Image (cartoon, rainbow, N blue to C red):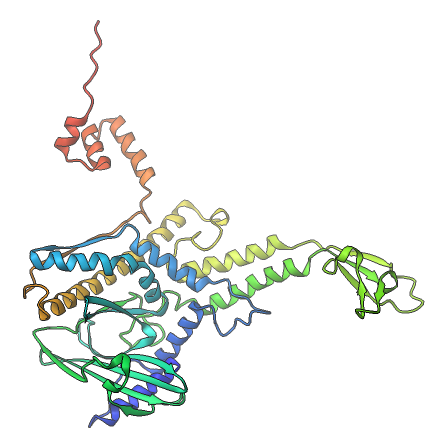
Amino acid sequence: MKFSKMLTAVTEILNQDSDTQVDVCLTSQMASAIELWTAMYENHAPWVDRKKVKSAQIPAATASEIARLVTLEMQSEITGGEAAAHLNQEYQRKVLPDLRRYVEYGCAKGGLILKPYMTKTGLSIQYVQADSFFPLSFDDSGRIQQCVFTEQFRKGKKIYTRLEVHTLQNDMIHITNRAFVATNDYSLGTEIEVSSVDRWSELMPELSLAGSDRLLFGYFRVPMANTEDTDSPLGVSVYSRADELIAEADQRYSNICWEYEGTQLAVHIAESLLKYNTDQNKFEYPGGKERLYRRVSYATGATDKPLIDVFSPEIRDTALFNGFNAQLRLIEFACNLAYGTLSDPQNVDKTATEIKVSKQRSYTFVSDTQMALQRALEDLVYAMNFWAALYGLIPPGNDYQVSFVWDDSIIVDAEEERQTDRQDVAMGVMSLAEYRSKWYGETLEEAAKSLPEPVLVEE
């Protein structure tokens, strides 16, 4: 079921069981926007038909690059007591290895939920993309207070749907599971017992939990102002402000592809020069070069047409690529990317100051996104700790700390900075011990001991 249709269906179900109308934070306008961002990311943008307009796959490249910059050399661990050791083992094994891939999905669609849950083998992590959850309310700090998660699958001609509703109310978390079966994509169908579906048979229909001040998941939201719906607290795609620019870029990319295809070398040859194979009912081309030769039927008596004509026009690739690159630069600006990230870095006609400003703009956005991801991961660890303590895997309490180290090489050129430090050493404004401490990861005392002894020259 399409995301916008699912939103309507979920809202109808919730309103049936409520005395007042449920105020869903996710509007139909935002649902349509998420559908568009998802289609663009999956290379199914509405303007792409694979014939006249091809996709340059800019949305996926943009989301991938921002996710790479955000998680580049990221380091995070959980430290503390006995509980922290167990949590950190699960964190390092089940969260961090795949984090970049899921951050890319969050960047593409505007948000991502990281939700831990218990299985027979221990803690597991579910990553819920923006087109599979429906926030109903938020608090003043931006945390979700009520949310609906959906799961749907087909079995034969039937479509099964599960709604998992999480609600925080009066320091209590209420989780309900409801199942539905339908024979079409237009509604959820008839409600059935959750236990009647094999894959959901072990789920509890209702569960209430005390002792938490937040819902048990982390919500990663792209830190951009929502221009699709300024009243919505939801995040937006990293390319949400560039959809029209990307559509034009796809058109220009398609023109380039057609230029190469349309200007391929060809030989126009008169039918009278070809042998007709009556057995196969077709003309035979010299040496089987059907792709090279194009047969032409000249009018009887024509004297101004050659029997063989070579078609080899000049390719206008330079002008077309310049136009494509100019469009990519507009997209880079709209998506907070430094010039040369998508466009040709050798063809960026900018001053050194403009290039530095574009890197700083990208660095600022990446830093904001890192902080948004950090908040989501902190909430995730909180939820992991809650479930692990509830099931007796660790002692109860919050005896842990989560640390993060983020890379800043997007704005700082390490080799350039190192060369600058060498010049400072030569000038005498930086000691060799300070230089060694900074670049070799040693303390000042260790660095001083590691310096070579000065060589004395006898007079």
